[in-house]
Every structure is written in structure tokens, then in C-alpha cells.
Image (cartoon, rainbow, N blue to C red; front, side, top):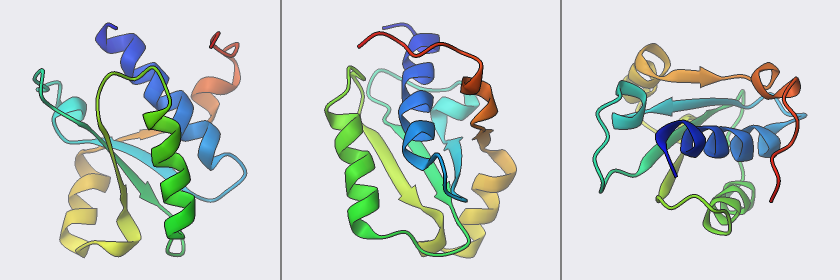
Length: 109
């Protein structure tokens, strides 16, 4: 799976999971900087006006595990981590919006 297809798949899964909520999704880390290596996981940050339930986050992680994504996806609830880390993610990360996939047909599979 090439980089573009991989990230599109991860983005689609994440955005479908948060649809209808106030949760914002950020790609951060080496994949956001274009510095990923073969062993790099994909870091996804979730920002909301309130903490997210463990069950809800576990459900998203399970969707990634059951997907065709051949990399580990690390899902971070940004409401539960150090504020300095959150500021770095919000500043340096790439926010994925639902409008980016709204006009695209669903992928097969």
C-alpha cells in the first residue's frame, strides 16, 4: 500500500468514526512531517470539548486493527495528555476534516 492510499484509508476510518461528534482528528508525528520509516506507527490525535470514553477510543482502535492498514495506528485522546504536547500537535499536526471525504465515493472493502 503506497503512502497516499495508506493515509487516505486511515483518514477515512478516523473521520467515519467521529462523524456526528465535535471530535477533531489530527495526524501528527513522523507521518505528518513526511519523515516516516518502515517501523513508524501512524499517530492520530483526537481533540474534543470533553474527554472521550475508553470504549469509544477502543472501538476506533479496533476498526484500525480490522482494516487493511498494514501499520500500527496509535490513537491519542488529546484531552488526557500534557497541555504542551496538545499545543504541539495542534500547531504541527495536520487536521483532517470531514469535508475532505464528503465528496469522495466510499472505497470498496
